Length: 158
Image 1 (tube, helix red, strand yellow):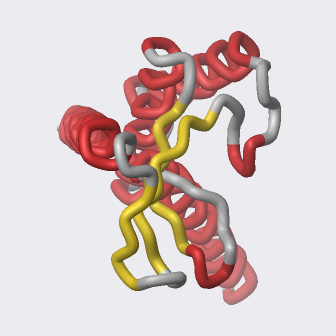
Image 2: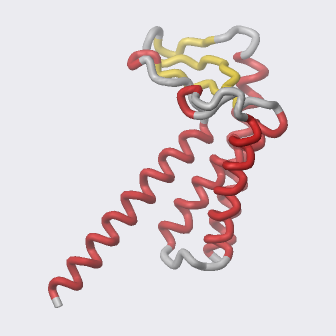
């Protein structure tokens, strides 16, 4: 049951992502940027034709098929019950939601719509789907690391 709930959450994340991107296209594309806090945090419209930090520009099919393959593997991991604990199931589904959101953009628009711009540190412009992928991956790595560490501690104490 948790698998289906987690996958439903992925769908909800995709819907949120696509709605935010439509809003960015409608409201930001005509003006380019909208400062929330001048020179600190802006909403800035960007059509990203590569991946993170603009890498792999023009490698559309590689990005599409690579992303699709990773997403298929993650979905199969969830659906086959290979992930037993609740946290990894939900974290993988957060990653799936973000990955699908950006994959939809690549397939149907030919680029990913980015709109969140942290100017104070001159960071790359990104979107909600990127946040899902990065935060989901970071928390999953933390979970695996600490879960593994706790398991080894139990073994040592026996």
